[in-house]
Amino acid sequence: MLKLRVFFRPVFLSRAYRTSTERSLRDAEDGDDTAPLRHREVVKDVYEESETTASRSADEIEDFRKKHNVTIKGDAPNPVLTMDEIKLPEKMSKLFAGRGLRTPTPIQSLCWPLALKGKDLIGVAQTGSGKTLGYLVPSALHIVRQPNVGHPGPTALVLAPTRELVQQIASVSADWLLPSMRIRHVPVYGGASRLVQMNDMRRGFDICVATPGRLLDFIQGREVSLSNTSFLVLDEADRMLDMGFEPQIRDIIESMRPDRQTLMFSATWPQDVRSLARDFMSADATRINIGSTELCANDNITQELQFVSNEDQKTDLLFNILEQNSRDKILIFAATQRRVTHLAMKIIRNGFRCVESHGGLSLAKRERALQLFKGHCNIMVATDVAARGLDVQNIKVVVNYDFPQTIEDYVHRIGRTGRVEAKGRAFTFFSPENASFAKALAGVLTRSGHEIPDKLVEYIDNNAPSPSFRRNFVKKPTNFRMSRASDWRRDSRSFRPY
Image (cartoon, rainbow, N blue to C red; front, side, top):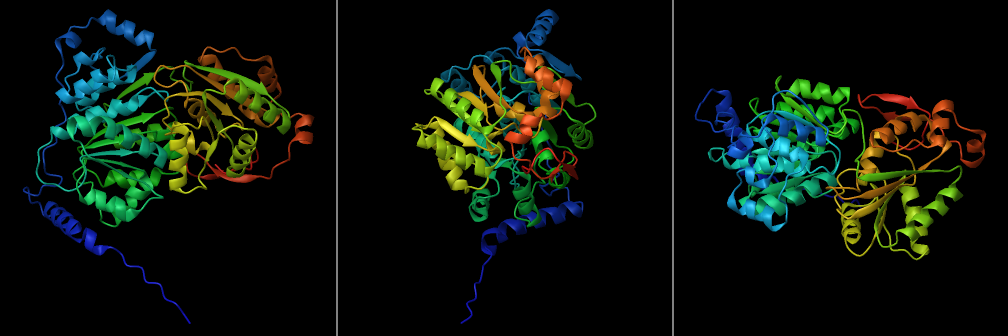
């Protein structure tokens, strides 16, 4: 007997919302100045400079920039060097004081005045630099200063590449903005219930934190409108372009107000990120570089290379590291889901507590693994799904069991430790298979103040796999991977999908 399954679309949940949105859009198109969408005034400049900040001398500002290796292209107001210099709501000020935060991080010192003045800015800074609060605090102050005209949709939008990063940003918002200013947020990402996310949005929200794909689905289904959104943040812009999100990002931005304020943050400054900034940001946008203008790692991380020629050496070195750092939080990166599972089982069999995380697991299992890792379980094995967005403050050791596919991913992997001025160690197993990355890796080491090992110099000079590699590693077939420009190209170096 044939069984029919009928799927009902929850039209009743969004009909009223769609009707009001469509009516407002139609009024705006007809030239009705009373329509709330797109025609409300955007209040951008909400900055009140303190006397201390305004009277800061040029020498003091120059010393600050040299100390933190800051490069600024464009106009920028004086940095705020203490929390007392920035005028925040009373509850938020008490929250900062109660948590012992008396001094902003360098990226916050520079971004807060610039963003509060309503200027577009580009922040290029290493991971763990405090940039999340660097844009969430200005977004909250922007929201509370906008006129209340009963408009649908969020006032601020934060786009991020992965659901893990979306969840981390939403967690920071819940910890800081909700208790101090009652700023409501809704995280929107794939792998979770559309119905639950749509219900959350219908209850009203001020900030939308989203991945581009799921948000565009809602926009195209007319279940959310960005016509009122006047504050846009692109977080980890380089990673979003790496993942092929450029078409979705462009569609999302084109559905927003043209008079919005835009903030873009990236760990690197490649050509495709520059192109996106040129297309969607004002011509006078200020670019702030914290650290080297070239790709570099956090100076608080001690990077150690371990040269290997076979899998047995990698396994022996891994367990030596685990035994020597048995009381520390350790994050291990592997190339594939199968390798992650295999390593996790091997670690557990040797008496260690360990969890795994990769894209093949359900969202619930990944969230459960993260909670265990934050708690009593001190070892996690993961694919690059954890390279960005994993915000566990007390990770002491990162192990690159398999070298990543790009040098940018290497920087982001090891950036999971040494966060917010803490110290960390990163161990990387480097084999002949990785010889093509030797020169780029040497550059990262040099800019971080590390000496280049003699073995790495040999790889740079030769830049070719040795005969021992062919004996000890299985030769892998060619594969295609997506480049930054979102086109497919042949890459014979790795079988792992990008």
